[in-house]
Image (tube, rainbow, N blue to C red; front, top):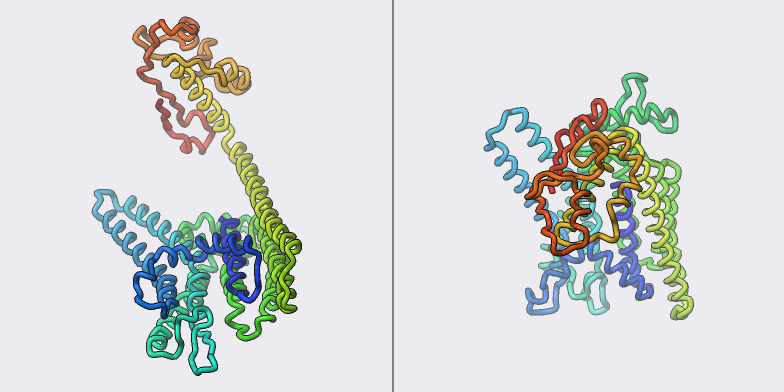
Amino acid sequence: KAKLKIMVVFEQIVSRFPEMFSFIDYPQLYIRVSESISEIFSLKFMVTTVPFECLHSSNHNHYYDMLFTKTAGPIGVVVLGALYYAARKCWLQMLQIDTTELEERKKKLHDRCMEAFFTFTYVVFVPASMATFPFFVCDNLDNGEAYLRVDYSTECYTRQWKLHLIYAAAMVLVFPIGIPLMYYVFLWVRRDAIDPIVPSTGKRGRMTEDMENTLAAIALREKDKTLKNLSFLFDSYEPEYWWWELLVCVERLILTSSHIYIDGEKIMQPFVILILSLLVVKLYSHFDPFILDSDDIFAEINKWATVSLIIFTLVHQMYEIDDKHVPSGTSTMLSVIMIGVFSILCYFGLTTLYTELDFFHKVFAKMFPKSEKLIARQSIKIERYTIQALENVGVRSKAFTHDDVSSSTTSTHDDVSSEGNSARVGGRSSPLINTSEGTIDADEKINRLGNSAEVEKPEVTSTTLLFGPDDVEGDNSEVFDDINYKL
């Protein structure tokens, strides 16, 4: 989850550069990549799918439609989500279940809806905010008229513009101010539970002071079920950095709106963004706010990637200042560098993800030692029954045979050779099948059939694979309680 959030932030920031620095002639490759990213992460698909040209008889005031779509659209989605939550809650009330189960199911519903709500607001925060800010920036022409800088089809200071100005101001309160403020209120109210005092030490968890105490604090907050609905906002961060998501909101705003707060100083905009980006890199490298080191490393690489793309922008700006076009060779080189930045970021993302999956796999194997053998055994059973099913329809498997299974899994069979029709019982390693001739050994029947298509093929009437709580150790037995596999 943390790495996905880091990538969303990166994509939303860098995809804004061509629009934010519109005076710079970016390579077409970069523009196309940015537009593709914006379709998903900046809600452009909501604008492009609405046929605004059919709603107007003229080419005026198109920005009003975009403003309404990017702000009222997300609000509408939230309202629909609230209606869904209310309907599901009423439906649960009508079920004939005991009070304890009812409250538990209502709690799960609430937690799922809140997590979906926070995820949605996290994604729409930047595109909705960037739709409201440009509404306040107008260009005054020599003839006395004024138009929105982002859209010269929309005239400023008219009666219609003033009405929409009120709406835009309200949306500023809802999105760029309202969403971070909402996050802050939720986190501040539960800050003591998110950053708890460990009873055994009487201290809060601080990774730089005592790692074991910090891990104990993290375990405490994970056990607190009342925090589950807020976990999206803090569960990736160390307890002392429960507020870090607010800093991320500020970072996303300032790095995507320089054309608003540095109005009229186009040349300065990339330099200011570069300085701010370097400051962000320093903050991440100094505090290391994430619980997992791999998340800290990935986040820092992500921020350096942003810095490199801003330097890429400055190189293009130098040519623009001299009224020169970027030479094709230089443009190609810069495009290759840009692709390299994205490739390196993707590489580190995939490698850290692989490392974590491997780590958690080893932890799982250590916690549930029998379950590893159990899963291997069930896989072998399924493979055997698949081979037998192919034999029943006259197909001989050449890619994978029963002997291959037996030879590659001898140690596993020796460890788990006492249960089920298809485990080794009395020296038999092949499954029993039910046929019109009765219950027989599958290998015996396969040998009897041979390759003759004239021999009547046995019909597999039923096959059941079972494993239960005896297959796992100790208190973990409920994990695989009475699981049935049927083919």
